[in-house]
Length: 260
Image 1 (tube, helix red, strand yellow):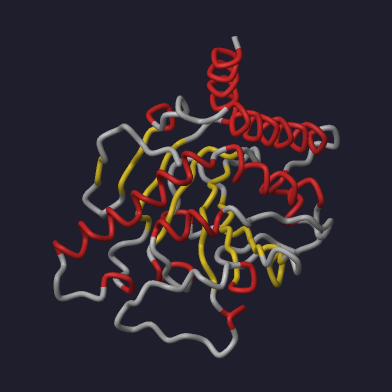
Image 2 (cartoon, helix red, strand yellow):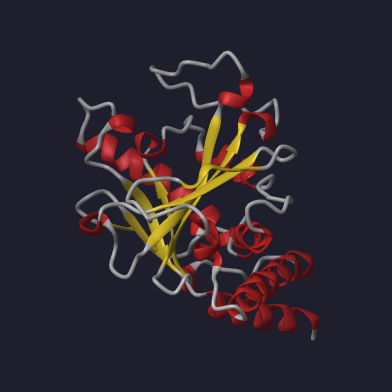
C-alpha cells in the first residue's frame, strides 16, 4: 500500500488536505501500475463515449430524474450491485456548502454483504450492530464533479455525513478492494467509470483514508467532550484535488522506467 510523503495540512475546520503529486507511486509493481493505467484508460473511454452525444457521467445519473434538487439522491434508490454489494449515488449540497467549482459529488460505499466476514466495525462506544450484516455500510470515497461532469476532487467524510458504519482506516482500505459495479443500470458508462476511478486512484484513496483517521484523532484531542463521529462541526475529514490526465502521465512514466 502506498502512503503519502507529504506533511498533512489540516485546516481550521479539521480537514486534512493532501496533494496528488505527493502520493508516491514509485514502490508499486509493474502489474499494479498496469492495472491502474488500464482503469484510467477505461475511465477516459467512458467519458469520450458519452461526450459523443454531449453527455457525461453526471447527466447520465440525472436522466429521467426530474428537476435537479439539492440533497436528493440520484438516481432514486441509489445504484447497488447485488453481486459485489457496492453502492453509490450522486447529489449536491446547497450552493453555499459546496467547494468552488463543484456541481455535486458521488458517494461510494460497500455494504456488509461484500465486506469480508473477518472485518468488523470499529469498537466505538455507540456501536450498534444491525440485525442483518448487509445493513452495515462502509463509505469508500467521495468524488467531486465540476459543471462539465469531470472529476476534480476526492474526499472522505465524518461518520454522520453519510450515516455509515465506522471502520478503521486499515479495514476501509481492504474493503475498497471489493468496490465494483458490474451491471448496466441505470448507466453502464457511469458504472464502469466510477469503478475505474476507484482503481485508477487507489494509492491516493488509500492515503486519504489514512488521513481521515489522523484528522479524527486530531479533532478528538481538540474536542475531548464531543462524540466526534456525530460532531457536525467536522464534515470533510480529508481531501485532494485530482487530475486523471496527470495520474495517467505519472503512472506511464514510472511503469516505463521500471520496464526499461
